Amino acid sequence: MDMEKLVSLCKRRGFIFQSSEIYGGLNGFWDYGPLGVELKRNVKESWWRDMVAGHDDTTTPAGAPEAYQMVGLDCTIIMHPQVWKCSGHYDLFHDFMVDCRQSKKRYRHDQVNGRWLTAKGKRIFVATELGGDEGLAETEQRALKFFNLRGKDAETLAWDGPLISLTKVPDFSVVLGPDAKELGTLTEPREFNLMFKTIVGAMGTEDDAAFLRPETAQGIFVNFKNVLDSSRVSVPFGIAQMGKSFRNEITPRNFTFRSREFEQMEIEFFCHPKQSPDWYQYWRDKRFRWYTGLGLASNRLRLREHDKEELSHYSCGTADIEYAFPFLPPGEFGELEGIAHRGDFDLRSHMEGKLVRQGDSLVVETDAEGKPRHRGSGKDLSYRDDITNERFVPHVIEPSAGADRATLAFLCEAYAEDEAPDENGKMQGRVVMRFHPRLAPIKAAVFPLVRKDGMPEVAQEIYRSLKTEFNVFYDEKGAVGRRYRRQDEAGTPFCLTVDGQTLTDGTVTIRDRDTLKQERIHKNDCLTEIKRRLAQ
Ligand code: ATP
Image 1 (cartoon, helix red, strand yellow):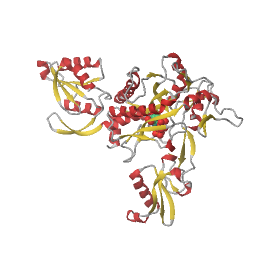
Image 2: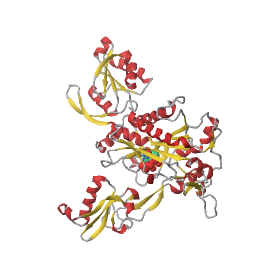
Image 3: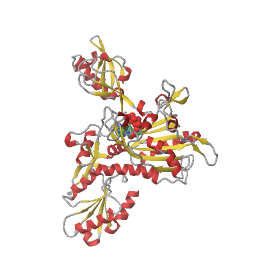
Image 4: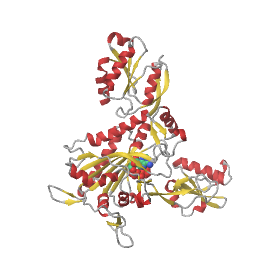
């Protein structure tokens, strides 16, 4: 699928707009239009319903070690700055960036690739932001240009090895930057903290600096005791939260995939350390099934377990759910969600202070005077099992998803082009968004065939009866074929049309977006019929 077509459809039909577009836009920020906001709400509501509100606390689900409880939380975006010091984000949450002195462009160090090459007696590293075959083609093009060679001289370029990351190149003086014409224009990598800083209070000084949260998870950890003391939960249980997060990404790109303001849907699941490997597997599989259940095709979706070297220092297992987004080179996948076994790292950090690894264990990091580098809350965040009397710090499994990335994956997956007959029965090309009915922004559209003979009145009556249950759209303008096509582009699963026959026998047509089949049902049965079809 061509990403440009999707981006243009998103703008044209009101799914996604660039933020502050009339002022030229702001890089890394996106707005959801009338259809987009419904789609994203449906993504978030499906998540909340399937993970929290609809969860049955009393039954052991298939694959789970036992029954468990789920509750929700809604924390502030700005929290006490100490939260980020203990969590490690203050010291560690950064990327490395490199600047190009010539093109004035900025890159994330680990996102630049390139290959070694010898030509005309010179060994250089040709860099690119692309990967896969596109990266190979681009580096060849640029190398030919750099050495003043023509396409037919491509064989004289002696490439040495495949595309590798710029992070593996120690000497930048021989690097041809991704947009540079000369060698050695890239600066040394510099650290850059991804947290947005702000000042709290009118008299604010640097001491009053606070941060916009880069993840929603920490709000859950710091409220662990509040939830435990105020509700009747017992381990194992999960706390879920969704909301905005902010990261000052160095190179926001790929539409909404890497934004600077985005929404996360996170669960922290607290369990006994001994059971944690089983819970990790349970959540990994449950979360994968959630995406396929909502229509992501399994050949574009994959579950990737991290290698041992990739794991964070506190984790004994992490898997990413990844989707083959159309803007990525063939064979590459982008992360939709990470499921991590985090051990007791987070709760202990907020009790004791920022932790570091020492040998096989985690200890509080200390400064030159032997005091904690970042002091914890000192509050007891351990848990006592009422039945066994055992006291322990629960281990945590964290399924952490992005609402915007999920929405983008559902948009990419839904986009299709095929043919449908127009008013005269002639086949015409159409764009159709094949959303899962649960996610579709509009569930049904109601049309009077013509704007006379009492048809609008009947159609509006049907519209009002459906509106009490779901998002329905009424449209009486233009040729009915064009109205169908607009609904296909919006991804509306069903269209109901009131026509001449309705006035005689009370039936209307119901048209299915995907099969294009039209059937007649009684106008009084519309609500039950749409409900039945949505539930299928
Ligand atoms: P990446 O490696 O792509 O930067 P990450 O591993 O840093 O992602 P996490 O910290 O695990 O991401 O965040 C959990 C989820 O939040 C991600 O799987 C993703 O869906 C979402 N997310 C993270 N950063 C962004 C962003 N800049 N824009 C949109 N969604 C994001």
